Image (cartoon, rainbow, N blue to C red; front, side, top):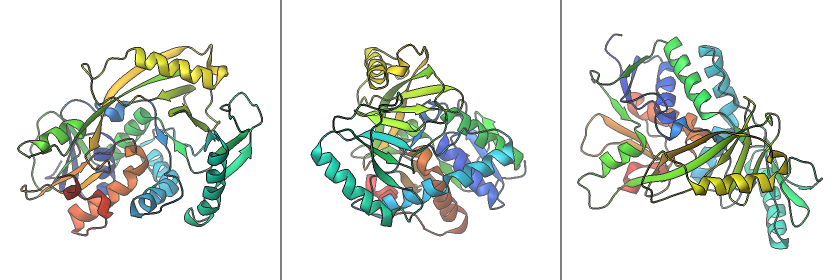
Length: 346
């Protein structure tokens, strides 16, 4: 291609989303990936796009809400441009109400959501019916929100890459000429690089293990119970996850901790008891010290920018992160929430 207007390092969810957003604004874009697209945590299997609870509102929660509300149209355009389906669907989510205190809190949040979610999604408290795709609730009540969505991470990455290529973007595997503005969206490895020579690390990695069953729950809501996400994907699988491990010896191996999650999922939804496990997955998710995404200029590297740290919320916030980074890098406008600024993690 001609000399790019923007080079994006990393073909995970942040890198591909930024490249796509830049192409939509007419830029020439090159994506450089050292291994393969989705090589890090973006190549996982869970794909929960879940909102913050509707209370204690701040700019970070408002940013996420805008991303979730706009996700359907954003992913539809990706699908239509590249021809590949990201398997996105806004199916909602069920959570058990564990005690009377939790019930009072859930009812209060239902009222708060009416205002904060702009009438475009609901946080409801509903009676459990005993259906097979319901978590057990000691109180007999469930939280049902209609904002939670899902996509399959690998399908979403492939859909983005196809759309980028259809728009004239370029993917280079390995070394490539780098000119002009550079965005570094290189996940866990990027956080380690950014930490070099600093008094303390700007972030690190958290290992997650997840599993996939062969079971068709594509039209059913997600279930979140006892810290476990259970998600029916559009390809006839159900993903569960994940562990959060700050220490590990093998980044991609699975062990008894995943066996425990599998047993927990089957106990929560007995309809999964005989569903075969078709994949066990593990990977390292990038976590900034502030836990929020790290967006902005790379200190002491003129013309270089950082988009990293999408711990647990990368896919849900990708469209907004991409828009902010393209505003900054190509147009010189700073539109990001204060909580996301790089300097908060330095």
